[in-house]
Image 1 (cartoon, rainbow, N blue to C red):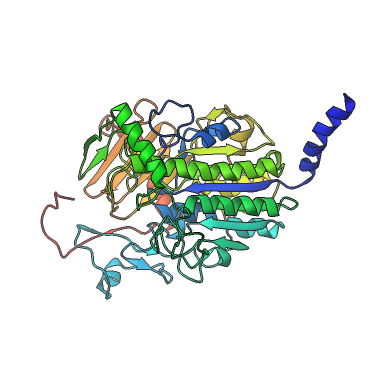
Image 2: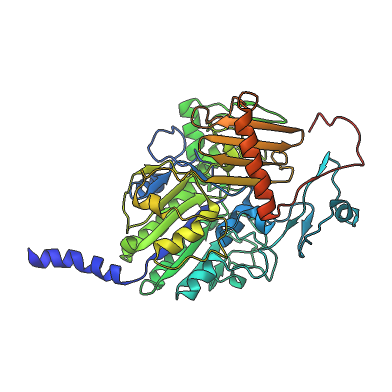
Length: 496
């Protein structure tokens, strides 16, 4: 009996002697309702993530730092709000500015230069199209502590010279300037991606990225590592392995599902999970996650590895095929409503346990940097992750009292999906959106109205005043760039 007990304890004691590893899994455009953890969604299937969730803490108020991708990815890497880094729009959007943006930025002078112009009532603010020079990234911080660092998948944080290998990653498989798998056969080999070798004809990108990550884990089992798996899925183009597409077409028919939409001016918002190709993309992504989880188990590293699973923004519900719905949350990708910024967030920390528990503490992308440093026993870097806060206390005690801190989202751009420029703040149960065109305030009680259906601004002027004051202070602290009124256009611009 003693021999049996010792044989079970030795691997755990050995694991405790080594620094904790980190596996960070980021999915592109995955909505908060796209992960079927409890089997209640009749259409989507994510069995590997459902199994993983039983060992993780589920943050039911997890948020991205922006309703579009690059800003959120920047916040994860830097621990800073995109307003501070000026990475406020997806990289490649009009009005991009690769050089430094001067402190005395003049929008009139900027738009007078040759280049894209806006015919909308507001000129969107420019944004920096790469991580700020001198940034200490998450990868660089852990590399300094002796971690092997690995990146696979979508980067979308700048052109050549600003790739993963330029920001602390030893290995980069697939990460470049593009925001989607747009070369070759897209999600299938040959990929036409100079950062990943083609596999056999027809090989699927999700499977390949999952396998590469699993292989890295197995090859580095004897030293600490940071493995960052950043899926291109479930971003457009909407395509998946044919066998899975056929499976969900049959399932859709069997369940009698029909596409349904509701108005979300100036667009329409999908209201039901029924898109067969998108469901197939979700299952394919889930299978690749399973490869990674299996590699941790096979390498006996599961009890010594922190695993994070999340998304870079809300699900795509109002544009580009509108493949999913985020209901009960409003709208989706590109919008400052909850459907655009609320995301799935699962974190497994074997040192604290609490698998299968949930926490209602609101956290967002900038928080990962300080949290992972704290969870692995490393000193914080407050001069770097200025806007992030460690949520380790909520991994240790998921039911701990709410922190009460405020979180901010600044999106001074016109979203491709129908959203418009604005800034949002969440503080406790209150969320205020300060829209910049047309100028108005919307106040929601997220506890009573998570779907943001009733604007309470007129009924709660004191709350509006307080939250507006906090937004103004946020502008000053981060030196947030703002849109500017377009003096060249006349009219009421009702269509915007």
